[in-house]
Amino acid sequence: MADHPISSLDPIELLKPLTPVERAALARQCRFRRYRTEEQITDHLGEGRDICFVVLGRVRVVNHSLSGKEVSFDDVPAGGFFGELSAIDGGRRSASVVAVADSLIAFLGPRAFQELLTRHPELAWQVMKRLAAVVRAATARIMDLSTLAANNRVQAELLRLAKPGMKGNSTAVIAPVPAHSDIAARVSTTRETVARVLSDLARDGIVKRRADTLVIRDVGALERMVEEVRGGA
Amino acid sequence: MADHPISSLDPIELLKPLTPVERAALARQCRFRRYRTEEQITDHLGEGRDICFVVLGRVRVVNHSLSGKEVSFDDVPAGGFFGELSAIDGGRRSASVVAVADSLIAFLGPRAFQELLTRHPELAWQVMKRLAAVVRAATARIMDLSTLAANNRVQAELLRLAKPGMKGNSTAVIAPVPAHSDIAARVSTTRETVARVLSDLARDGIVKRRADTLVIRDVGALERMVEEVRGGA
DNA sequence: TGATCGGTGTGAGCGGGATCACATCGTCGG
DNA sequence: CCGACGATGTGATCCCGCTCACACCGATCA
Image (cartoon, rainbow over all chains, first blue to last red; front, side):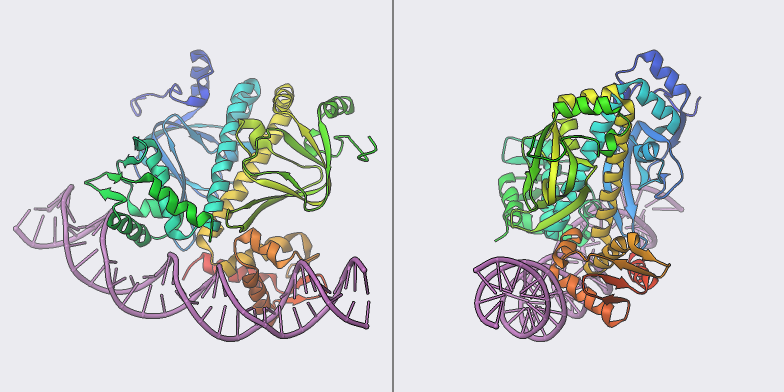
């Protein structure tokens, strides 16, 4: 369809073990739909049970408290998938999903998904690994929320963001810098607290702010600030 | 062995679909071990990769911050299992597990577990459902930690404890009452805060304390107290 | 070029709840 | 029957960080 450039499942990591023919057959069972940035794909407590493949773009799993507070979970880049939970257990959606870039999503019904996994145990195995990773991330986050103070959680998040951008072993570059409010939503604090932590770190020369990058000059110092509270008095 | 009353996997829910003969064969691949109450079974970051079946007793998944703060996750009753994560992805243990009653645990190596799941897709499916349930519980908890105040989290936990003990639709009985410190560990607050919330609820006639049971006289009122903060101003 | 708007910086103030510190109160072991 | 210990109830204090409020600094657009 002229509507979308590729209606293929080729970019999906999970489906790599399939032959091109099998993938094409599967694609024919899917419903494809484009979404613009900011557009909502799935609603918390929604009734859909499809598994969703991110063919193009990038989506974010978020949730809002009724009071409007936003809590954000993982981002899913192109090649990934989401919506497994409902496809697996038939329950309602556990979170909302919004596009954070123009995206193309493929929807596959739960029956077809189950059949796929039964026919291809390697895929079932991959899905389990993915779920295991999600559980690990969630437990780590619960630990952070339970044992770390707000500004230490921000520092910890900076370290996570720094991981991919390590230059040498004491400096790292974060680029582009997420909006403060995005960081805040990821560690459950306020935009203001994030700004203040960043100010403090800049004052102490631990980070340096540049146009749209953040340079961390002393990763070790940052790690120590987080650990020493984890370790308590 | 005289060491343990049954070295059978018959009580395990997950393995019900197997024939008694298959289950017996699987049991022969397991290592069985007894644990007394309070005894530690698995250590956070430990190297074991076995999946663990709770044949008898009851275990609790907990974690400690280095400062000693205890955060408790799910309890696993007899018939359940834990340790799937490491068995699936080969990573270190994501939490500690301690016996909360004298327990008999069966350990199965990761290879044997994987083979079991490959040979029996129904079981793989069950494991996925279990993982999905864990993810749902974890995301709900993250939402609670992020959007609810400490005393509202305690109220929410009381509601969860009340669910199984509903008598009529406005009263419920919790028996036996967990120690305040256990409740505190489940909702990431302090023992004192739990005691205070309970005092306040008793003062308002919403709960009634008895010997070792807690009677909730107005479940609706409790729900409202939680919801109205979830909903914000 | 001014206006609007989203992102950012930072001060002031207040309140929830963690912390510390005791007082009970049962229950168990001797 | 007493002492010890674990669980509980409650007051006093203190401080983190949320909230509110406002200024600033680009961008984008009419």
